[in-house]
Image (cartoon, rainbow, N blue to C red; front, top):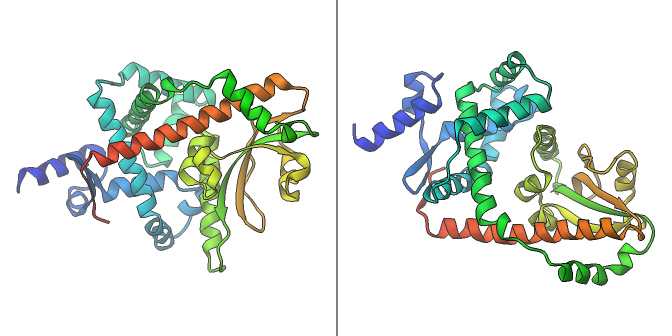
Length: 319
């Protein structure tokens, strides 16, 4: 057995300690990112972890069919994550055990979880505490490198805010106005069970939002609307210009709330009410404009940065 195969086996044994040795040997490499591998079992563990209860309750054959249809999408996410972690390490960034412990304690506190209920939650997800710590450490690492390389360098000037408000004065000065974000999936041209898959994606996103994940980040990953490139932000919209389905959903929402998935003739929507403002509330208007412009700048710089990481890296996909 050559050295490369030995390295793969060691990695798999470390990550999937509960799997049998025979199962590990049957695992396969689905991508190589520089000198690191991404395995089939790693890819499917990610999809299983993010699957909704509806999918988890399906028979294995049906569940695997859904996973199969989403392999390429999730693999691209894993590749981008791996590139960012590699870049963080190259820059000398690290994550201490204390940082991971503090983050986990914050999650337990936020969701009123004891050590016992937290351990039970991990067990239901098929995770050990060590695997969970590893995954969490990677997320913190990515957050650090993104903050250092992108967010810390974004500045939105007062002049930019002023210009945006002037360019959109007709929207901001007429009655009640909503500042909305959305995650959108197009309605299938034919109804051959695809609606169920779309609804499942929607409820998977709801679970992740309830777990505290960022709406704009999920919109960038999943939304099929052009606004997804801007973190899902739709900007300021008059109440009189909003579709009736949106008005109905918004009537039950408070600032900061996100909706359950709902259908319109165009597709499936999940919306977030970022702010409800009046023309006289100019300070809040300015603050929301600044947030929107910051997010636009972030997305543009982040996408260029990830693209540059890909361009200078060796990536091989073997799906």
